Length: 448
Ligand code: GLN
Image 1 (tube, rainbow, N blue to C red):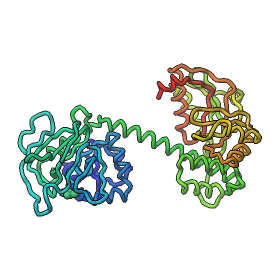
Image 2: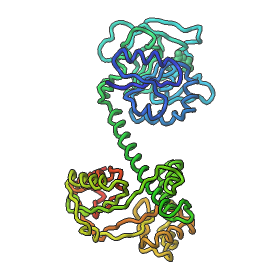
Image 3: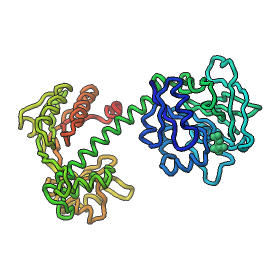
Image 4: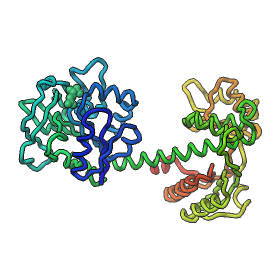
């Protein structure tokens, strides 16, 4: 059963929830972005579009929901909901904004003021079949569609005025179907011909939503790893980043990845014992082989040795790899300090080189969007300090393992190696994975 959210800022929320339940959907009120991202389709109820706009702005929903709509979120908007789906508005109040999504101009209060609210029968073309009986339609200070773009299908006209439109998976009506016993709109609304059936979970949005969830989950894991680094650095070298360069770099890296400051502060406090909940993490490095004979080093930071070992072993064996004895592949890598600098228009490779040369940098490489500066791990802090002193903003500074020799992979091997790395990184105990492969730009492009 599909989950349909009813935007619960203001308006006929309860009536829509009941009507959706009556046609077999799981209906829930939604008002936070995360709630809206999780549903299969959204209803924007009638109410007062000026209030919907103000509340949507206050909840910081305007742009994000517009983006979800552009990404394929199916939406049914009724009355004020029609207004919220219009790209352009007439007779709005000063500054009034909408989510947009349908190439049309809606005229607010077109059918008159409260006193002029009325009911009458209209004919709507909701699907390709004839819709038979007319709809008994309730209009309450209803808008009409003044102008609709070429891609917009007009589904209903009343006295020469457009009162129902559809474009892709967006449907808007000037009338209020939730206020009558006629459930034809609710039962059809999220079954869009040819555009995917939201009711059975086969819409384009279902795919987008799934991808978003995967990205969010990955982001969550990355945050947890970055925060763990901060905690460990604070435990080892104290809570003051000025006297603890490792902590400084761990914080910098977390911030650059948009980890909230609060999470970072708490990790520092846990690490330095000022707040409970800190764990005794130990560093363990596992070695193994991946598909195509690629050498793999897996750095773990764990408070549970057995779990880490088993996670790593399972990831290797399920993905065409195997674990190897300590020392059997680690000699193929060198421990180095790696500082990444984002490119800007003004910044040249020479600028970077000049800044870091005297600080012990061994190599500066142009990686396309970034420069990398490689040094001995012991010189890394000096390198990034030199960059700071030269006024060059750096992205990250990390001790890493760099392979001394790389193995070229074909497309099939590359896909398998990336799957293995993904599976390893999926473990909460794994901090970093290094592998000595080389994949051509061409293949990278293919793999997306
Ligand atoms: N006129 C109202 C508005 O501007 C809409 C009325 C309704 O949704 N019933 O939002």
